[in-house]
Image (cartoon, rainbow, N blue to C red; front, top):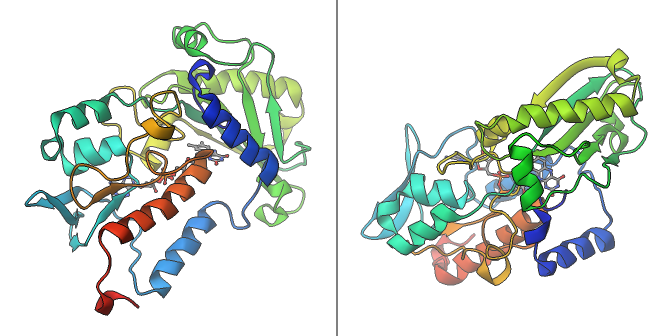
Length: 313
Ligand SMILES: Cc1cc2nc3c(=O)[nH]c(=O)nc-3n(C[C@H](O)[C@H](O)[C@H](O)COP(=O)(O)OP(=O)(O)OC[C@H]3O[C@@H](n4cnc5c(N)ncnc54)[C@H](O)[C@@H]3O)c2cc1C
């Protein structure tokens, strides 16, 4: 569940590193305020140090002048900067926001061919009784695992009897999330990252059969359910610009040929444009690699394009 890739192509170097991180760091954590609070704290740091944080706006275009990325355009503004650092995904950034015409053809070819990780889809359950007993629960059989062959069969409709299911119950870390006696739980199963694929709905349906069997009282206590699919994940994270891509959970897949020394370089061939987040510059499980990338790419930008003394605060 930590990798979201077919297991036969997960490199041992990646697997061992991440499993060590999980075991040594304590598996399963909850950030008070939710994971979004981590991003808010980072945004506060930016504004406290003289930067601007603008949310709820879309970058429509990366501005390119004389072979350099010089800023971004939204629907109603242009913002110029010494560097553009994008975590909108390497494929949307290169193929759509900047435009392939600004990159060498072999780079465009490689970026277009990068494989997305699997999608994680599921249901958020809001319930009026303490049904789930642990903050992180995994449900699986010895047939739940996916390699390339089993994933191809799944896409053709031949599913494992029991999909690999993870259930997170964040209110068991932070009771303030729900009224007394209530719970919020989020199920997660693998599906195709293609936002148009029907595997999202089928994965959710199959997970609910297992969940209903394991927790027969659940249905009696449901106040609300909120399913989420690859289409919704794509809307919240990255645009679909390559067939089959968009709803991936952890950016480009951590498979042989796309991670470690073969992972894309955060420095793109377009001067001034950097990729940050899951697709370049970091190592680890999901959010860990995005944060690791953030630190590494910040240092990289500072080394490449140091601020002049009068620009520092
Ligand atoms: C359902 C699900 C469950 C997960 N569970 C876990 C977990 O338990 N543990 C874990 O470690 N990881 C988990 N992950 C993975 C983790 O969320 C990602 O690895 C991480 O968020 C990737 O960070 P990022 O910065 O690369 O991209 P994102 O977090 O996707 O951030 C990209 C941001 O860019 C914005 N954006 C995109 N395009 C534009 C644009 N044109 N203009 C402006 N903004 C734009 C998006 O709105 C988004 O806010 C999960 C992912 C999913 C989908």
